[in-house]
Length: 401
Image 1 (cartoon, rainbow, N blue to C red):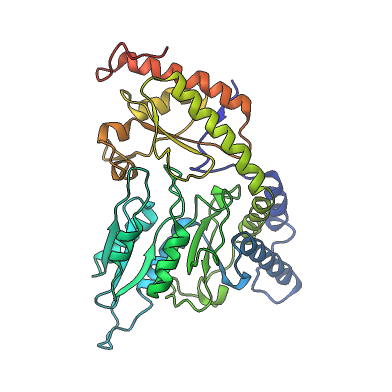
Image 2: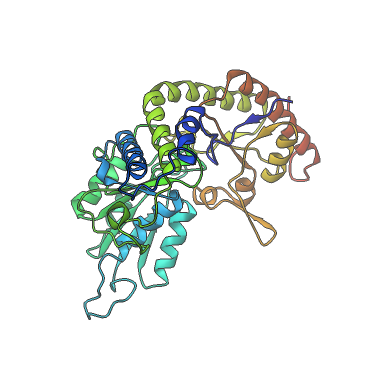
């Protein structure tokens, strides 16, 4: 049985060209990039080449790119780094944050942002969580009203990991710039899928993660606009201008650089092809599965993401049923204490808990084929039909035609 992978928002495979670029740095090119001898200098050259490749994807300057362990670290560094950059407090006694500090974010952020903001709330930071509409988008007027004199950071994700909905980042950037507030976006789900230009978007900080764009897990980057005050989170040597001490993961960095280069080359072509496949998948499901609907269907979305509601089923059960049939996808739910909680993203857009639990995310990738989508359109309706026949909450007459 040939398995079909439609969970690229969770992680991607590592491109063969990325593996090839990395391999020497596990063996012959094993130098420490901080060493001054030839082994170290070759490693340093590879790191700086990768820095330029990542910067090119984002239209940034290479010196504005700091390599991290991934999106979570990048998000945390941006949020804590800005919030704590105002130390020492006016009294002269260093505390975690200056009293009165205020941050603006949204209710649908990734946990790497939400949990960081919640941790800062415990330190006395005021946080405004902007609501979203049914399509998963914030209201710009509400953002404008939320800005205060003590606001130090606006952090709004570029594209949502569950819905694919793309926020109006350029407009948010203008609002932040006018208010002289630092602006960070989590671009983990957008970089490599749609154009990301830190200058056009007026960004101060941006996070990416390698394993979302065909590089390895455990490597990411943080764009830090020149002149941005940011308190370091880690203490050690003077690596990466002091922003991120520690011996660089040269192989991972090289892999991220190569993946960024490949994404830049193929972004427009990939987006057009994947978008057509995504639309084919959505239309096919809506035609074959009664009562199904696409969440955030009217929002601008990343070309690869479809979040579909199947009333009358449990999402976890459908994921398992599809996996047994050879198709990998996911829900937005998280398992907590043995109970499946509805996705905070889907409840934020107004779905009742039962409908949030009945929603499935299909996320396509660079290597998804037409034949795989055709096969998926046979597997998904059959699995939904089977589960609905067993469901006490779904009308028995509303089964797959």
